[in-house]
Length: 89
Image (cartoon, rainbow, N blue to C red; front, top):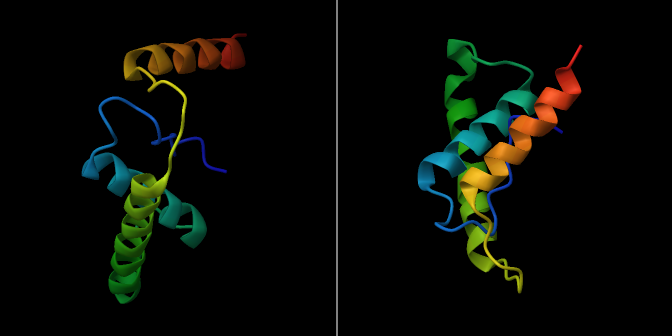
């Protein structure tokens, strides 16, 4: 899938509305194949982002886990280390 969409479940504090919207926007951009829709498609694009964001918020509200919540800073550091290894030349 898209590397720009990050896991949002099981973080302390929980994902914000902005994070959910950003993930929905990335998903719709990927599916649509366009970073910016034409004026003719803007309404459909915006509606899709809103629907995906709502579905994502519902999903996150319903998910349960017994795992301890993840720390955002630790996960970001792990992601940076993976990127360094991936792009090391």
